[in-house]
Image (cartoon, rainbow, N blue to C red; front, side, top):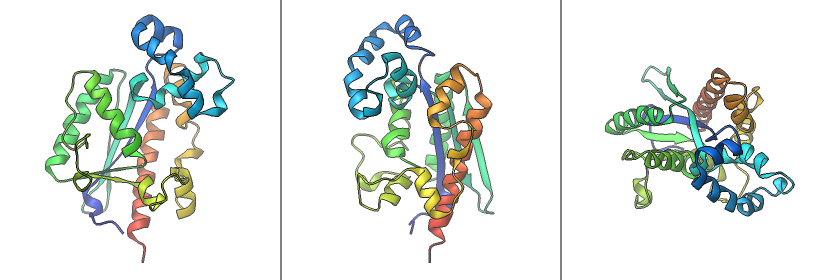
Length: 233
C-alpha cells in the first residue's frame, strides 16, 4: 500500500504546550503577542464550540498548544526501522525550545541526505507547520526536508497516516486513536498523560518524563500502524 520501504520512513511526533504557564504570565512576558491572542478569542470559540463558556485563561491553557504561534515544543520524538527490523528511537526533551529545534534541524538534515520520508499522524496539518513556524520565530531556517509553501505535491517527502485513513474522504473522522482501534493496534490515548493534559503536566506537575513516554508511545504506535498497512494482502 505504501510505495516507500519502511526503512526509509522517519516516524515522529511533537508534544506542545502553551508558551507560558498562564495567560497572565503570557501577558507579562510577551505583551504584543498576548494582544493578538486575545483578538482570536472568537476564532477559538468557533473552532471549539464546547469552549464557549470558558474564560480566556481556560482557553489559553487548553488550546494555545494547538496554535504554533502561541505554543512551545517541549518534546520531539523520532524513530526509524533499521534494516534488521529493530526500532531506533531518539527524543529531544528540553526546556530550551531553540536548542531543541537546532537538534531537530541537525537530525532532519542528516536523514534528508539519506532520502528519508517523514511519517506521522496529521503532520501536514500540525507537526510540520509547527516545526517550521517555531524555527522561523527563532530566526532558524527550516530544513529542506520540511515541505514549504512552494513545494509541489509530488515533491512532498511526508507520509501522513491521517491522509491514508481518510482515503480521499476529507473531512471524515480520522483520529489516530480511531485508526488504532480499527486496525487492532494499542493506542497511546489510554496513558495517564494524553494530548489535552500535556500543558498541565509540563508547567504544573513538571512531569517531563511522563510527556516523553507519551510522545514515544505515539511514535511506536505509528510504526505499528504502518506495519499493519504494509502487511495488507
